[in-house]
Every structure is written in C-alpha cells, then in structure tokens.
Length: 133
Image (cartoon, rainbow, N blue to C red; front, side, top):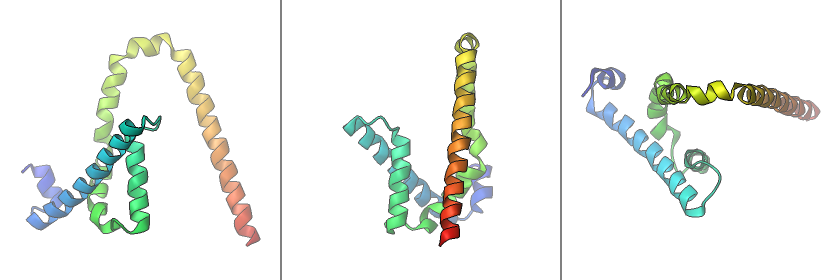
C-alpha cells in the first residue's frame, strides 16, 4: 500500500474499506451513466449522466452521503492531479490551438460572458422571489 493512501486513510483497514466503498459507488454510477449514454446514443457525456444518477440516488435516499463523502473529499483534495491528462492533450495539439486561437478566444470570451449574465440573472431572480415571500 502506498504511503499516500496510508496517510489519507490512517493506515487502518476499516478506513480503507470506507474509501473503497465510496470509490466503488462512484465508479458504479460512472459506468451506469456511460452505459446509458451508449445504449440510448445520447448527446450527453456518460460521466454527466452518472453524476445526475448519483445526485438522484442521494436525493431519494438510495445512497447515503456518508457512504461516498470520504472518497469524494479525498478525490477533491487531489483534484489538480486529474488535470494532468488534459494539459498533456493541450500540449499535444498545440499546433491546432496556434492555428485556431481567434475562434477559441472569441468562443471562450462569449461563453464566459453568457455564463456570468445567466448566473447573475438567475441569482437576481431568486433574490427577488425570496424577497416577496
């Protein structure tokens, strides 16, 4: 067992089982989402469908938050590690980015403005509704 896992899990078998159960549940919902995506040929990525299924299972009480929280917290603490493959992919396709930087920049700026505008509008709407109640 690696030192990183031992330090995160405290070295005890019961802690490792807690993390293992959470990891299994997260993988189960990921695979379920991917299977649904492939079976129905949906335009939504399987990992997003898996997250939606996990959220529904948590809301309905099919999965207890305590079952996945330790593993999810561990993964979130080391989130930067998961950006390494994306960074490597960007470097591998740098020639495409160099050739298409203007549309990429325009798309990034427009989508950022759209998200800020929609987020701000939604927040303002919800605050007005809350003020009326």
